[in-house]
Picture 1: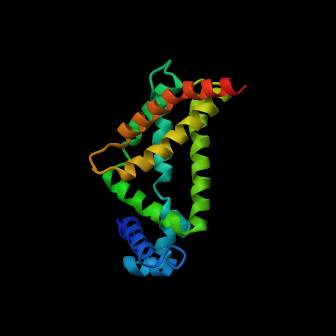
Picture 2: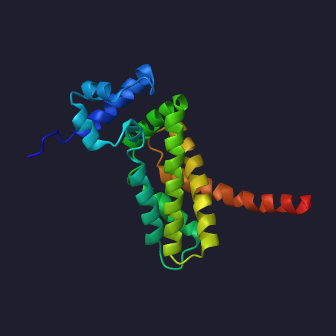
Amino acid sequence: MSRWPDDARERLEAAAFELFAAQGYDETTVAQIAERAGLNRATFFRQFADKREVVFGGEDRVSETLTDGIRLAAPGSSVMERLQSAFVNADAVLTPEQRLKSTQRVAALATSVEVQERGLLKRSRMSASVCQAFVAAGFDDFDARLGAEIGMLTFSMAMERWLRADSTDNRFSEIAIATLRALEKRVPMLRDEVRAAL
């Protein structure tokens, strides 16, 4: 039998974000989070490596769904088609509940340099995973890296739009694919501008 509640992680996340909102990320301690959740420090550290991981606890699952989507795309799929597959696959974890957590994460990011640094590290790891997925799918290093950069730019822009959307009915994949198509349209414009400048 487990020595800690099955919902310990969810309780700790909820308590942490309540405290972050009330008093700020930097002013909140692990002991306060555990106490608010009705648990102890030992249980906290069974669920999270440190306080920063509360903010980014779902990022690894998002990264996995993106890379799985790239790998699961039909053989012969282009970079853009594989990115679309990745974004559709991400809907499994980017749910309305996750949208609320992401909104809370953005608020924590705005107030703490420590959290911002961890966010940049997480994003870098996600980009590397996406790049590796493209390589595993048979793309050369240049195309794989380009695909990862386009994918992460699209992901970041789509996340901002998803979080600002008026309705929780908006699926992340719909916004991400629309963002990807908008980027595709702008590439020829940028190419023409570069040529004109040379």
